[in-house]
Image (cartoon, rainbow over all chains, first blue to last red; front, side):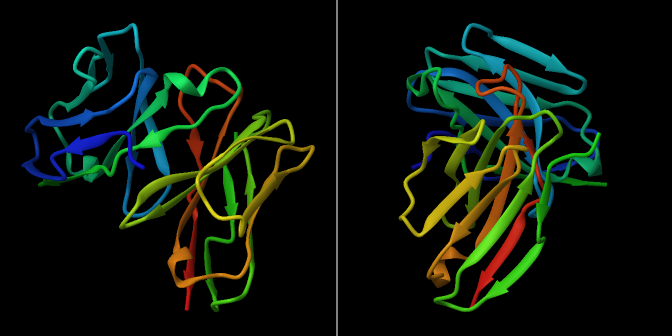
Length: 115
Length: 114
């Protein structure tokens, strides 16, 4: 079953605009990660935020995490046509313990950036 | 350094056949995980291997199996293929069992069952 749910399912914006995607999850987590997938290819890791962190930046990406609301957001600033892709959040559940590593992915947000 | 290599990239099989997919992780990475991606179910966890031991298994039938070799390369096998097994199978590797960073994924094997 899916732990994370992204919102919106699809987003279409003009180049240069900002894109915000949200993710909600159900159980306590060790960390939350965001991945990008271009057209049915492999996933590319974007950023990891730990449960004790509230905000993290990487280039044009800004991720926030609110563990009290079990939610995260990914902001892409000054979007480019090359940002067109599907974006997934993935959670490392707290119950997974030290003996295993299993990410639970949401169904993704499909972002289209129009030149 | 080379990324995660999955072979083959595309595969067409008939119902009832079996298939073996291969994954070579990044050199030095000892953890390999497999995920199935379908339009309906999204990304679903299959298995996780670390140092040749299966550490975790997802909620898939026994027709799905895997293994990891001493060089960390991994294979997954699906027997008695069903139409619903058509999917993109993704392999991911990481240096440690519980890394402080994300996975590195391969480009996947697109399996079509006819």
